[in-house]
Image (tube, rainbow, N blue to C red; front, side, top):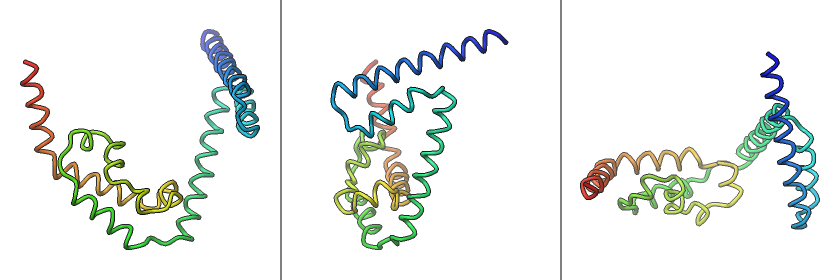
Length: 153
């Protein structure tokens, strides 16, 4: 039992030291004071307190996103644009295998507001489009992988 307590104390101390280093780094780079204040607050937390803090911040963000969604109904032309752009995509290994590359190919910020995007207003449609893309190109993907493995042999 004593080892567990010592380990916890040691991990908390290391966590706090690393966060204090971040504070000093941010001060040297002249980050905005609100960021420095937040980092200083975190540097005084234990790992467990920080986990609780992150969960609370996520709940607040979820509430804000829900409020935004309530006040901003979905727009049909944006949903249609997601699927129009999906139809134009051809097979690409990186688009298939990486969410990042898929979103870059669809380019949602090209037709929806940044707020809509960051509040995940159309995320369910983007996720559905990604699933459709992967289902449509599954065979090409596995052929690509097989060819790549064959070339390595």
